[in-house]
Image 1 (tube, helix red, strand yellow):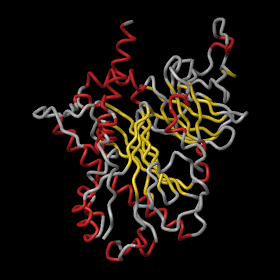
Image 2 (cartoon, helix red, strand yellow; image 1 turned 90 degrees about the vertical axis):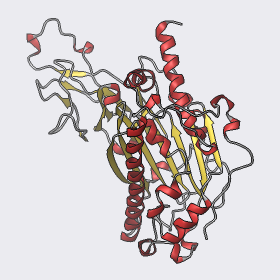
Image 3 (cartoon, rainbow, N blue to C red; image 1 turned 180 degrees about the vertical axis):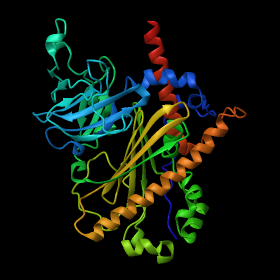
Image 4 (cartoon, rainbow, N blue to C red; image 1 turned 120 degrees about the horizontal axis):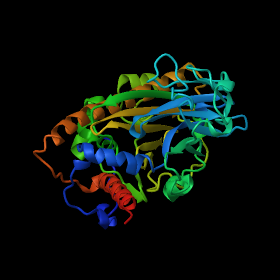
Length: 421
């Protein structure tokens, strides 16, 4: 039978008394009015991850990102000096979207020397400078230096590309991330470049879906059918409690031990897992990635399962002990809808067997994620009914308390500053 870890002595919630222990409200997840303020207070002020440097490895490589929550589209591009730039995806002439393919609402990527507007052929270089205007002599005192692309604050940490939509960011990126996140520096993200991605439109508030991955209390119940019956029964009877939770500024961490699946009784595994030597926890033949950063596995679990780092507001880096990692993004599109993006990263496969093992791990986690999404749509429906307005949270759900409190604090801070208080 599998063994399930128990937490350290004491209450995690007691470590953060400012969060309280009372039942919580989810008004912040059903109110259109709150959402409108949240867009400005959170998403136009926080650093937001929009991708990784491997998406634009060479000069002129670019991708676009559609960000409805801040009502814009951006271009992210690598310039001739190797720097990553970000710009609003709008031509300065008549406001046409500058970079798009067949559907102007869809994201795109490619390589170019200059960006050329489809409407009147104005051109911009990789640093956003306006370099050519069709029939320039027809304009009145046009100074091309004043009509470059509108930049977006952009910075890179450990290969992750972040942008900030404030006029001036309140903190540099690394300061915003803080010591818990920067404790990951040195993890070989750049060596894990075999990527599998999926995207889903979810009819639930973005915070409710984030909540689903901030605790494992639900796993033995919601995901029971994804495991062999013998394992699921043992998990449901034992329950699950992660051995470590941490809060650092606006960010959160849940860390847990794991299981060596290949050492379990064969009745506890699926046949496909034995065939592919892989599954939910990743390929069994994990790579040797060398010494891990001090910020990983803070509870010193053996075996170690995973660390889920939740970067405020909407980005998760989930690092598995088996030598791979996941990222999640939750992009709001309204007060009760959002786009969920999941990506799994592995070392480049050395053989067809490696590739199949990676694909099974990615597909397994996609199935788990979609189960969560389906449940959260049911949650959204009933929370919006208003017949219940306070919900009790247990000690394992301390990170949920923090996310909703942190969001409320950002909104309150924004409103105070806007009022000049």
